[in-house]
Length: 318
Length: 247
Image (cartoon, rainbow over all chains, first blue to last red; front, side, top):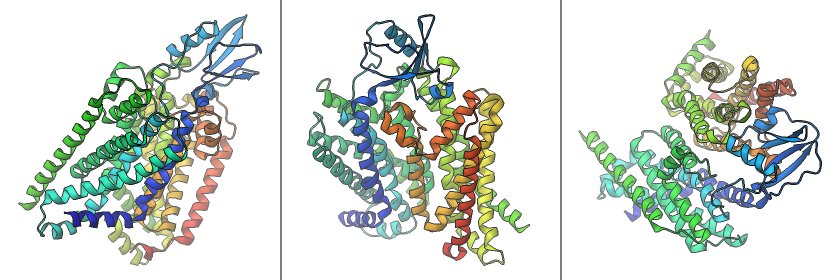
């Protein structure tokens, strides 16, 4: 089995195309995460027409003085989250955002002191983990392509040696796990140490989180690769599921205050990993049950994948 | 005549590939529905719903992602045998690659327009009302560009894996940077300036201007540039395409 793992790893390293993912994409994502964690992104762009000496008691605003009202398309593009103009001395708020946001803004314009953004603030580490989730899972999916190459004949040769099919599938799983985990963790830790990020999450904690993430990614990849046939199907459907679940989990940004969506999101294992990181960073509400859930889900995926493979093999043999 | 036969065959190959059908027929609706639903509580003022925003951006995203359709017709393993036979036949190489480009374009035009017409007709997405035809025209020009550049890249790189990897990653990066998944203009000055370098962002902005302000500034220029770039891609293909590379 170890020899098979060695062989698969050798093939993975030799196919350089896949290496683009961890070596190019992950650093870009980390840089983006650091940028988006910086303070000025948090601010809301608000245009003010006319009246030159408006002052709001809010730190969250980035006020832009305007001569005229802006066209609607500028609001749709979110160039301005809102435009405030004065009519007969009364302030009017123009925005395409929901009523909740509008009423809050109106209150602020009238001098009240409330905050717009709610929820826990995410630090750099949480942003990094949230942003790389999607790419790590994608990498886990992509790496199973040797599994498919093998179905064309190499698999037969290997299985006719003294290794069971389960062991063979498992060695694919191990290799993918190693190849997602090691580059990602190296780059993440390197970024943390070199850039000296301002976060409470230590290197070993980050390693642990990436480990769980890689476990999830390789389990998900194994399940998808067992269910579907053909490489294109996998990158397509797996990619779709990946994007949808990661977005629902709110890995990139907190998405909504809608109950149904929140419930859907909290089913996703990505959400639990993120919650764990946020708890670590804020130093409160830490629960290992989150992580246990993710490990449990990963194992269920792996077991399902094994059962499916077994069923397929049996069908193939008859 | 030969061209027409080849186009028919390539077209048939495309519509019998489940992945392609999935990507062009099911995926747009899933994306628009999902994003619209998730962000529905964030939008709503001035009659602009989240479906209106994400309907436009997701259709552009589908068009960007269709950059991988043409390479598929060239290099899909299933099609390779047939392609070899055609390249041995006494057919000019122009006809071979043109049939692939045209069939991909035809296929994408049909699926994208049907999706957009349905979205507009059912009033799920505001695609411009009276200006709908201009929005459609802009998207078709953009589609021509993505289809031809997909062909040009695959002719230059010549291997399926590398082309797919580079193109699909490039497409995702462009879509992400240009604000297809979230409004990039609200992410600070640096992100906004970076996004304004991306051509996909210009198309998105122009689309919003046409839909909401009835403002056609830069519209003609963008369409013209897209068509010229497509021509350039065709020229690149003409000089780099060698049927024997795909054997």
